Length: 245
Image (cartoon, rainbow, N blue to C red; front, side, top):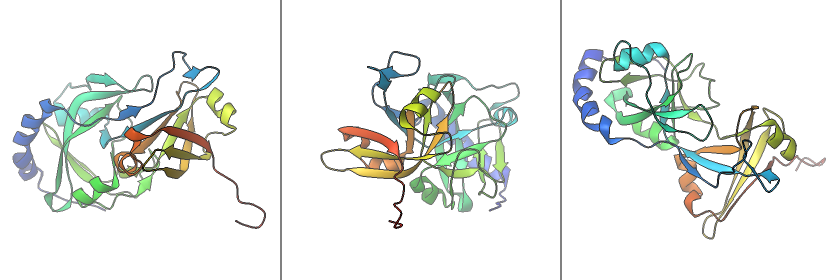
């Protein structure tokens, strides 16, 4: 979906709102679970599963950081994320969708990337009026665009708005433990006293430096009431039997 807006008008509408809200902070990924002391995150000889709720956020290129926040600007780390080397930046942006629907204070995550990408939950995409497809991070071909507005300027993305597919980060030791490989699909069971949920099609993203962590979005986290979970179980997707069931 391609969208054209009057950038000067949009900036005039939201520039003051950005300045007022930028210092207030915004939702960043919320983590649930214990953290192991070992580099691989293992406890008592086995992986220590962590499930995190990833709130709406965006990734930016170096060029877009300068356009949005001023020449010479770089992302300023505010809070380290669970995966080493990744962080929530101090900067936030205003997101403008069709018919001037807006989301203020959308957190920027670092480090910068070769392309800019906005990740939303389904509720966010409805609020913006954007039909964002479910995609794995980086798979933005043919996705809708939006306008990002910062204190110094605006950027019109022709594509890059997605609903991030649920996935699990893991290292080679974790993958061997579960008997899976990069690109496989797994199941996440979230058990609680009032709201048990099974999430299928959790994509395995294996990397030598990764820690075992499942990412779900805010809608999924609310659906399973993750904060009240009594147990979380990760396992390979069950294979269909010979009869096709």
